Length: 139
Ligand code: SF4
Ligand code: SF4
Image (cartoon, rainbow, N blue to C red; front, side):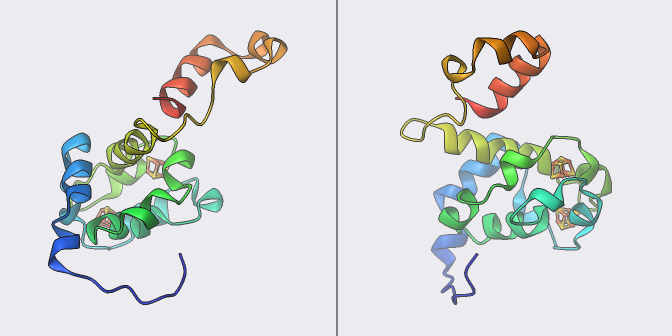
């Protein structure tokens, strides 16, 4: 994210975006108090543009555009390490899933189309991998 100053408002924090993430994920992102334990245990931070704790902070602040343009939810493997380490019981994997769902809703294209995967590649992939990958990456 750019280092520009962000002007926060009560409306941003109580925005439809924050409510939607909470509703889809079944979590309350406001429970996070930014201890960073999720990020220090996540095995995939090397590939993430924003740490899991940074991303949940953006969501708390209602910064929808910034939260949705990072690759973090797509890199997350739903391994639940963060959830097991969170002292506030936040299931970040569910928050990541909610963000993916919001991005895959109409008007935002799928990350992967089955028809675009070459037949030779499909033949080599395990079926479970294909199904779980498509569930994660398409609406
Ligand atoms: S569930 Fe996702 S964010 Fe949490 S530790 Fe695993 S890969 Fe990282
Ligand atoms: S471990 Fe939980 S409380 Fe700590 S930063 Fe991560 S989500 Fe927030």
